Amino acid sequence: MAWNPGQQLFGDRYIIERKLGEGGIGITYLAKNQRGELRVIKTLREQILNHPDWIPHQDKLRHDFRDEALRLALCRHPHIMQVENAFDEGNFPCMVMEYIEGEDLGKLITEKGALPEAEALLYIRQIGEALTLVHEKGLLHRDLKPGNIMMRAGKPEAVLIDFGIARQFIPGGVQQHTQNLTPGYAPPEQYLPDAERGEYIDVYALAATLYSLLTGELPMAVPVRLQNFTMRSPKELNSSVSDQVNEAIMKGMALNYKFRPQSVQEWLDLLGEEIVAPTQPVPTQSVKFSTHIPPSWQCAHIIPGGYSNNWVNSLAFSNDGQILASGGGNGVIKLWSVATGREIRTLSDHSNWVNSLDFSSDGQILASCSRDRTIKLWSVTTGREIHTFTSHSDEVTFVAFSSDGRILASVSGNKNIELWEVKLWEVATGSEIRTLARGSDPVYSIAFSSDGQMLAIGGKSVIKLWSLATGSEIYRLADEPYGDFKSVVFIHNGAGLASAGDMTIKLWEVTTGREIRTLFVPFLEWVTCIAFSSDGQILARGSRDKTIKLWEVATGTEICTFNLFDSVFSVAFSSDGGWLAAGDGSGNIKIWRSQLVVE
Image 1 (cartoon, rainbow, N blue to C red):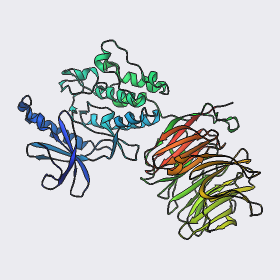
Image 2: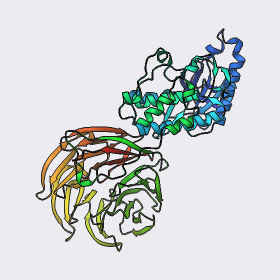
Image 3: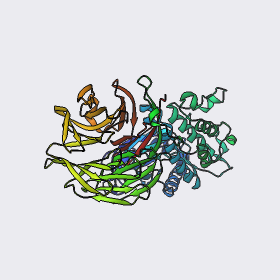
Image 4: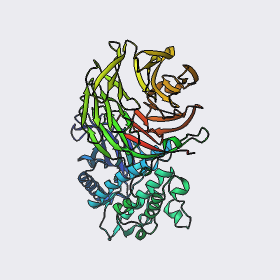
């Protein structure tokens, strides 16, 4: 039996697209339902049903298959593949499941290696919650492994799939189960035809799966371990694994099930809480990024889907590094605790995309701007709106506070009518001070000098320095026939300026306007966002290839690459350089913590 593309099943309710794959007992197909939605249809392999050894047990096979479909249909959980329907096609029982676009964790770690601990723990906790529900319904999965965990495309969401050898169990009862298993993830009792069955079977596999995610290696198989070969701990293979997680994995993989946690929740509790920030911030003046020993970074938090699959357009850290603000494609602003990764509050009065955010230096006020042509000032403490500025005639694309927090600069622009303008506002009164620049030349970014006397404006082919006292242009740092300066930042107490454009990073001496250094970086052709560390020594760039790259500006050396779940649209450093955050096109945010070189 082989179902070919175009073949109709269950009347005309499902049409086969192609075969997806087959295992020891089942075979799966990709199909479309009557609404044109993709689904997965699973049935029993004909070779199994008609095999001489199985013919006497055909009825039981069909019964077990239908029973699995029924029990899975009752397991409604966001991290379990959902069953939509069940039917018989001739002699073959079928179940219809959701189609999950993405890749499995097995493939992910094969291609990219071990995952950061925070990311791995996020997925394991999601699957652990799913397993807890499965166990409540009286089922054991019995084949948990990275290859049976799918990642939804563009989302940090793990989904448990393939319940092909799942079986009903009675805690403490001796039962006969098939010996289908995956070496490395199956505990000793799964090798026995008759043994007590309990949640601790899946506990072993869940711990082994975390072992694999953190090391990129297959755990030692039970038969080898039983010959007195010692399995290396995850921390021996990956020194960045925390002691608590390392110990939890080894307890979960104890050969004697009596020494393992007896439930998934009991084992999850051993993993502890999520990673938190140091209790004392690193003083800004003592931080120095070494050009010889680049800082290492660790993923501290993953905040999934906070914007209902809309882009995270803008990110900004408070000056003390304790709060991260994010603005999304749905007009919503969220404030997050950097230490815990938890949401503090939501600000939602913009009617269109939030394009840019900035905190005042004292951290009391947050400025936001939007496609709705407005700028808003918010009280960080109360979440209340303080002022709304409405003088811009078009989409407001960028906002920035002066270092003393008294002046706010903003940019608006419309490429269709070729009109851009830069305005200055008095924060205390909400009144407009002046329009600093207005014309057909595009403006992409602005930055205040540390003394508040100058504003740098990055535009098409040029960077202009303006005097805030007189409202007049002082001089230009660049005037080139090509290249857009999409990010500018003052460094070294205002004596230097760094800029990044389509193809280059440039360092400038502000007092003379002299170009100090140019780094040609063709990797920027797919850039969506750029950020400099406050000292100008590190550049972060986000891209549509779902990655962030960090570069050492002084040498042009790539430091590291981070992966997100979708195209990256925002990136930001904290003022002390100790934190990095990025947001993607599916509403996800990742936060990394740096190990800084301190003098």
